[in-house]
Image 1 (tube, rainbow, N blue to C red):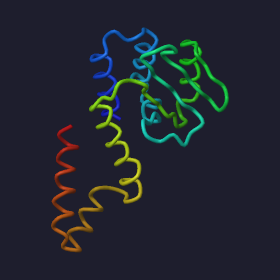
Image 2: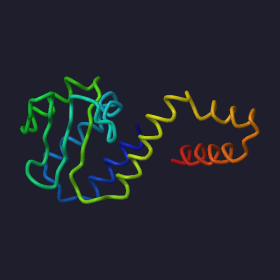
Image 3: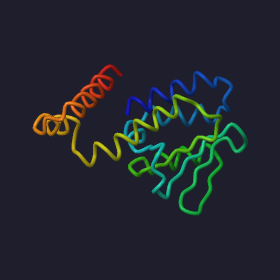
Image 4: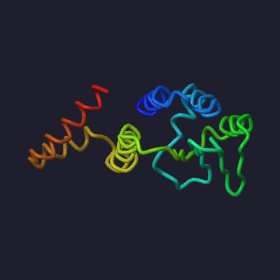
Length: 147
C-alpha cells in the first residue's frame, strides 16, 4: 500500500502541472486506506475503472457501462465503492516509477497470494537446499524492508 501512496506522491510531484481534478482525486485516494488498498494498477478484472489522463477528459470513472466525468461524482462513487477492487489506468507518457509499482503489484498479487508469504518460500528453499532461490528471496525481503 505504501508503494502506491509513494507512487502517487511521486506522480503529483513529477507532473506538477496536472489538472486540479487529478490532484484532487489522487489525494483523496491516498488519504483513504481502504480505497488505496483496493486500487490496483495491474488487475483489470473488475467492473470499476478509474482513468487518469494528460488529455481531456483528465479523469474518468467507468462502472460497468456507466461513464462518469464529473470529479465530484467520481469522488462520491470512489467513496461508495472503496471496498471493491478498482482498476486504475494511467494514460500518460511511459514512466519508470509506474512500471516499478506495477511490477511490485504483480508480485504481491500473483506470487505472494499463491504462496502465502516470502517466509514460507524461504523455508521451502532451505528444506530443498535451493541456494539460488534462497538468495533471490533474501534479496527481495531486504529490498522490501528497505522500502
